[in-house]
Image (tube, rainbow, N blue to C red; front, side):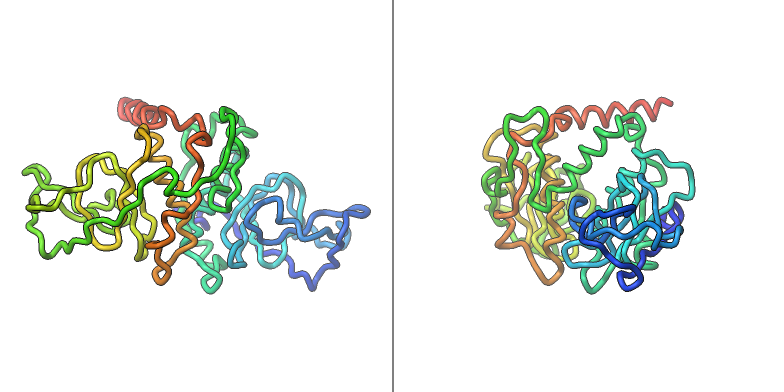
Amino acid sequence: MKLEDLFEVKNGLASSAVEVLRAPVGDVVPYIRPASTQQRTIAGWVAKNSVVANHLYPAGTIFVSTDGEGSHTYSYVSKFNFVPNSNVSVLLPKREMALNEKVYYARCITMNRYKFSYGRKPKGDRLKQIELPDTAPSWVHSAEAEDLWAELTRIKTLSSGIYDPAEHSAKSELVRVQDIFEVRYGHSLELNRLRLLSKESGGIPFVSRKMRENGIAAYVAPIPGVEPAPAGELSCALSGNGVLSTFYQEQPFYTAFHVACLRPLEKMSIDELLYYCSCIWQNRFRFSYGRQANRTLKDLLIPARESVPCWINGALARVADDLINVAHG
């Protein structure tokens, strides 16, 4: 579903149309600007009586940063009344929407950040055409609003170098990828030189830089003298449109050019490995088709193992249970 099907998009008010105060004096409301963290979105304050009512939005409203190299696409739900500037778009739901859903959709919009840049801003039709889920998952509706807000905020800040302590952790910090994984270059094989073989016939997965299907482009016959990467490792695309597409490989596999293999330095559960796939993927905004991750992957920051949220444990089983329950009505 397109964003415009769920929300009415309103533009903000140019700074030339208001007097922005540096301190909250008198009857004022915050004047919101684009920022990579919600705490930094307040640019100043404006007198409430100086603003036309249709530019004043209540607490609980979604707003999206539409400009700035390090700020574009970040989306938040305001906890107070505010006036947006001209580089902020406000989203008004076209149907009744609980706070939990608004926080969920704000996070979904932010996840589209990699599609935009300073030269390709999420404004106008580009913003309206973002694909969003038709409805929020059931766990969004059952979560406590404040807990959901805190959890999604913590996840969102991974790529910005800020990570709030998880409640279950004795400490919380970011470490380099190479502190948790052995990072090595893959096989650099060319698919057109290999013999295709079906999965059912014992074919070995050939992992490319694809963004879908676990990165598997085909299944190939075993190559004499070339050992596949072992099962249980992660594959990570280092270049192309799918840069940093990271997947858990449950079978031994070969790789194409510009694909790295990540072996955990300590034994990890599949839940943890999938979590780290997502954490690495969250850094994709740092790269593009012309800016590859070949040399910098090992230095990207991800949460230390002690900082992995407790809800990760058993997540795969819970998803499976939900799917089973849906299948059985």
